[in-house]
Length: 398
Image (cartoon, rainbow, N blue to C red; front, top):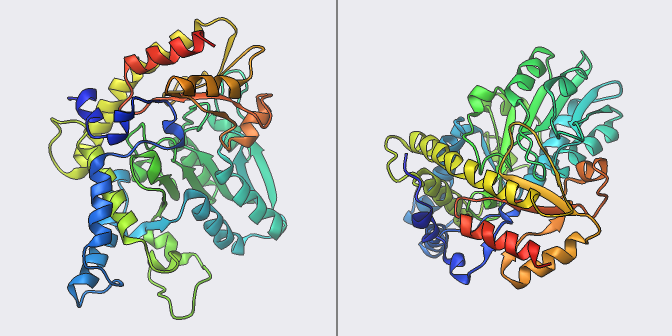
């Protein structure tokens, strides 16, 4: 296992700016290899997808390479990989599809812990069909979402359950495999929002046992887009609205219009970058991804401990989120201080620590933070102890 942060940092042109980036939970920086892949794909001979001409084949390759790369990243079937403009677009689209089978008396389950993109689409779709929405609550003190907080709500009326793989502000990582098992036994569908989990952990879709999972590429060094994954057999059963002449083949029937081949090429390159983070990793791309993510976790864990203890030592600080298993994400406020003003102060010294509810709307209100939320500092593969020291110095100088 070999994770060399200095080698990793050299791959990111934006780091030459001297900025210490703690805003990775909202979007990572992008390595040069990803930018190069996008540029190559958009400037090479390209036509609409087919296999007759060279330019058509180039477009087809971009699509198939993207699906294959995602399959390696998540350990899923490439034929179940759906491209989307964003994760929010994908959840809204799928909510409308699944809700075709919902009606009065049916129930869906969402959590207060989730990003609103894994709450509002399902809630609105249920309300439109007269179905009931049940809320799984997290513990305000620990930020834990116990398995039974979700599973105690299951019944023979349950049609669908949505749970985060990792909370984007509090970092909480619920036991999604345990939840998946009981949801399946109840005969309902289960979706995991892995947008905040994918940058920090090995994802094994088949082992988790969920029906759907997804992520946003711009959180893992790629371009701005989203991906939703399911078993092809399940997708075959889902009815969706589409243009009359467009294909009914899975997964293409869930993708609208001409696909952005250059963006897909960027996603592929970002996954290849992940596979290469451990310079000593060998084997298939999937095997190298697993080893690289394990190496990253080993690097991030002590660095996060260093950052958390340093922040907690500051006078007047209050931290939110103390789950036993969580991502390297710190959510915090200072008594009597405006978080946005602290955010602006840090920016003057090129330290990026934004303040907001970050669309964890329900969680922010449950924590008593309202719409304003708190400061959020998250680690990324290019984060260093020096970055943390700059953060602490900036907070002390406010």
